[in-house]
Image 1 (cartoon, rainbow, N blue to C red):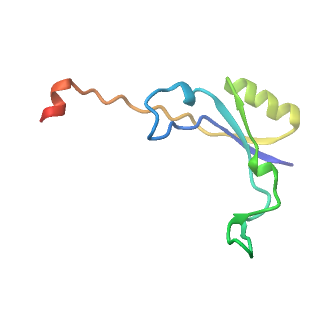
Image 2: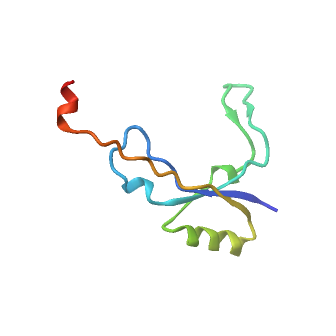
Length: 93
């Protein structure tokens, strides 16, 4: 049975908004280990499913897709950052 994980990615350090972090992602687990290419030295494998990332608006949509396709999936908990309360005057301390 094919394994997959469903999660909501954290935003990168270069993002200040939350628009890109609203979608849920489904990623397939790799079936084989990556190995270095003998010519270039880049890491790669013959597993094409490990390159697929499917975006969903809600967790329910992602779970429904996984159930329809017969995937053995794991849902990772959503990370919500704590807001840092700071005043404008704190910039000059």
